[in-house]
Amino acid sequence: MDLKELKAFQAIIQEGTFSKAAQKLNYAQSTITNQIKRLEKELGFQLFVRGWEAELTPSGQLFAKEIDQLILHWHFVLEQSQKLQKEEIGTLNIGVIEPIAATILPSVLQTFRRQKPNITCHFIIGNTDFLHKLLLKGELDFAISGEPVMNTLPFEELYKEEMSFIIAKQQADQIGPISLIKDLYEQPLIIGGESCLYHIKLQKELSRINVEPFTYTISQISAIPSFLKKFPSVGVVLSSTLLSDEFVKVPIEMEDPFIPIGILTHKEPHLSLENTKQLLLDLFRQEVEQFTCS
Image 1 (cartoon, rainbow, N blue to C red):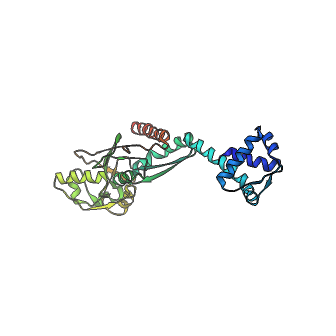
Image 2: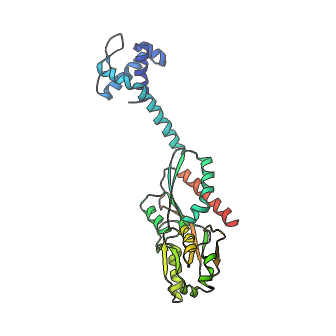
Image 3: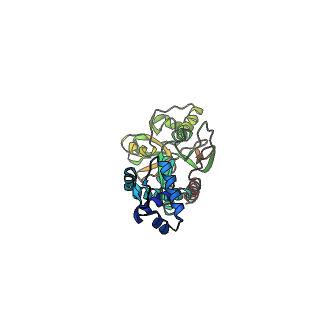
């Protein structure tokens, strides 16, 4: 059935006869008759008792009670399909690492909402390994993360994060001086989980000089500073981690403290909301450029 057939049925009910319905819709009466025949064939039952008056059958009376809602719903479906074609509605699933969520994401989302107010975004925060797995499962449209160790997906580098070693000012006397990476052997480290890229990179650096400090791992990097205030230790975070003046960075040189951060996508991008997705990616690129230049 189509909308024209439903409107023909509605007009007959409103006007009382086929001929008046035809006049209202500016159709020939034969057109109205044929539309009703097609509708009856699709429904599988007769709507009208044949005669001069448009008398409804019992089944037709039941169908007539629903016709207004059917037409309203049909218009709603058409409107939604037009919005989908124009990418005015829908949902994007995006993965972001913690530093991005805390620094760049709010500004990106503010600009994106002005341009696409009816597109919903579901943001999942996690480390690179976690987001990589979600992408492989098809649960994300893209991720802003590091490049996975065993990566098979397209990766576009946007900027580099740097590992930072921090201590709480109030614990500085208990920790003592730290200037070389080998000095970390003397203090417990609080660092992100073992699957975090910067954890893996630090382990390689420490193994190179045969140093293995005692470590505590935390899945949320943003929680590390809270531990340092209560527990004398050295925290390992990323350079963009937001810190209050209660903490100081320890200048420890590493062979390679940098971690590339960028866009991780599917090999074959999904076609749904593709233009909207590209808009959001461009906003991330622009915001990263401003962030790294400031």
